[in-house]
Amino acid sequence: MEEAIVIIGAGQAACQAIMSLRAEGYEGPITLIGEENYAPYQRPPLSKKFLAGEIGYDRVELKAESFYAESGVTAYWGTRATEIDRRAKRVLTNDGRYHPYSKLLLATGAQVREINVPGFELEGIHYLRNIEDVHAIQAGFKPGARMVIVGGGYIGLEVAAVAKKRGIDVTVLETADRVMARVVDPIVSHFYERLHREAGVTLRTGVTVSGFEGEGKVAAVVSGEGERFACDIVLVGIGVIPNTDLAHEAGLEVANGIAVDACARTSDPDICAAGDCTSHPNDIYGHKLRLESVHNAIEQAKTAAASLVGKEKPYNQVPWFWSDQYDVKLQIAGLSTGYTDAVVRGDPESGKSFAVFYLKDGQLLAVDAINRAPEFMMGKILVAQKAALDPARIKDESISVKELVAK
Amino acid sequence: MTKITFVEHDGTEHTIDAAEGTTLMEAATKNSVPGIDADCGGACACATCMVYVPAEWKDKLEAIDTMEETMLDFCEHSDENSRLSCQIKVTADMDGMRITMPESQH
Image (cartoon, rainbow over all chains, first blue to last red; front, top):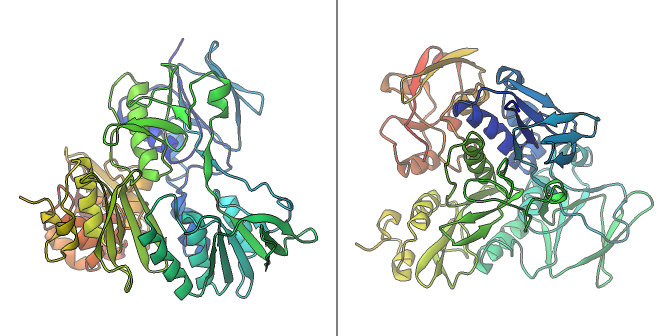
């Protein structure tokens, strides 16, 4: 058959893949199928400057409107892929069309994990993943409003910071005994708890939500212990799950994400996958990763594009993440899972600047840098090198981060 | 609109119309200038949008801040003309500016 590349999903990975496919010299047709009514845009600002109203759509869209046509892309916005027919090599969409492919890219992303407790359907309970979600939240984002945030992760805490600045009365409820428990050491969790409490946020840990109350519209969040938190608006931020249904139904290997190799190829050689939806190998850590990050979407999409045109550009990088809350920038280099020592550089108890180095038997796994760009940048380099570090040198701020590896 | 020319490492030139008030990074990525990754979308968190601004244009730009300076200090290809394009607001004074780009952002 004639060559034709179809991309399912229209987020950051899809957008990068289009650029990379053309850069790799692919000249055939590209079809882009996106569920949202928007061309690819940046998601990270949605819970930050975009929610705050500091920037609009024009500052989050990734490309000028003309880009897709100019790049030879036939884009279907507001369209959902319903089936991948691998035998006939075509994708069916909910508008009744089918799209033949010689090669297919799955960039399906992730969806929010929904809370399934009584009252979940009440008006005023929001999630935050898409532009439309933010518009819905903004409608209730008024000074003096009472907002309860379910979940003390990145999304919940970033929204708390924006809401507090807006003059909203904010309560954060977290099931675990500390915030951001999935990604950082207790030292960092406790710093963020202090930061939010000092800003006036009511922060409660060890609280499980058992239901929502209200007449049509949410009026209170109820905890497992029967405590009621009166509110006008609720945001639920309890994580995301990868969109793997299409891949699974098509018989592709799925295991905590669409399984791909280092070249972003799925178990079908004509199908690649990239971004939040994938589970991929990583040589630095020696096990499979599923990441929710822009960096992963971009870099894996570059790899996928190469594979789609028959080249090999394996993806093997240090993951990194960031979060902006108030005037504090958190930058994370690497993944700390499995660490044996958390070594602190700087003072987390006072001020707003320190870093935590995560070691496993002496080898650096990750760095959490709180308003510490040097530690973050050096951390990325050292994690890639699988550097062995001496905790005493990490703690000694008279030694520059560039000299952390003893000569 | 302000005309700005991006010169790739291999000499390929891209002249674009940048809207005042946006950043050089945004203008470049939206106009598909290759080689500016801008992973973080302009949060000064990643240092993957580095460019070289020739000395004669430096006065037309806002001064570099500590955060940007620190990030640049760790970029593999940075030199004394390096800037992060996400931290440069486009102004009318920059009309005609030519900036060059590194071999890679990593």
